[in-house]
Length: 193
Image (cartoon, rainbow, N blue to C red; front, side, top):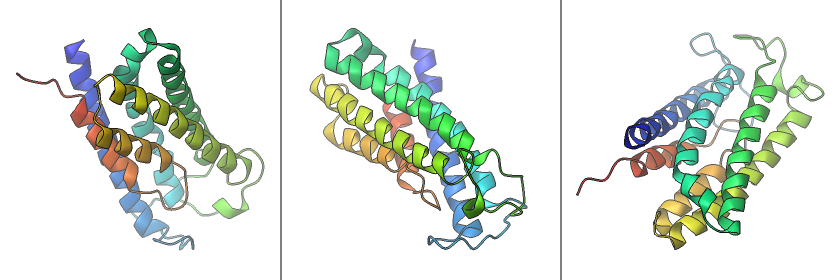
C-alpha cells in the first residue's frame, strides 16, 4: 500500500503540473479574459489544451480514492462524502471529455461558442459545471470527515475544497486546482518518523 501511495501522490503532483501547463497555454491561446482571442499556440487551440484536463482529473481521482479509502469503512456520512466525491469526479471527467473532445485539433473551424447540443458549449458546459458542484459538495463532506478523524488539517481541507470548486470550467481554466493537486500529492507522501 505504501508504494501505491507514493506513486499516487506523485501522480497528484503531476496533475497539478499538467493543470498549470493547461492554464498557461490557455492564457496565451484564449486570453486572460472571457473574450476568446482564438490564438494558436504551438499549433493548438485553447480547446485542445482543455482536452488534456482529463489527464490531471484522472490522476486526482486515483489520489482521492487512496485518501478516501478509509472513509468507506467509517460511518454513513463519511461513506456518502467519499461516494459523492469520487462519483462527482468521475462524472466531471466524462463531461470534460464530452465537452472538448469533439472539436478538431489545431483549428477554430468550429468555434466553442457555435457548438450545439450535448457536444460542445451548451448543454455539455452546463452539465460540466453541475458535476463540478457535485464534486465540490462531496469534497466538503469528505474534508470535514478527514479533519474530524485527524487525517487532514483544516487548511489543507480548505485548499482541496477550493481546488474542487474551481474545476468549474470558465475560459480560461482557473489556477487554483493546480495548487490543490500539488498539495494533495504532498499530503500523500509517506511520513518518516
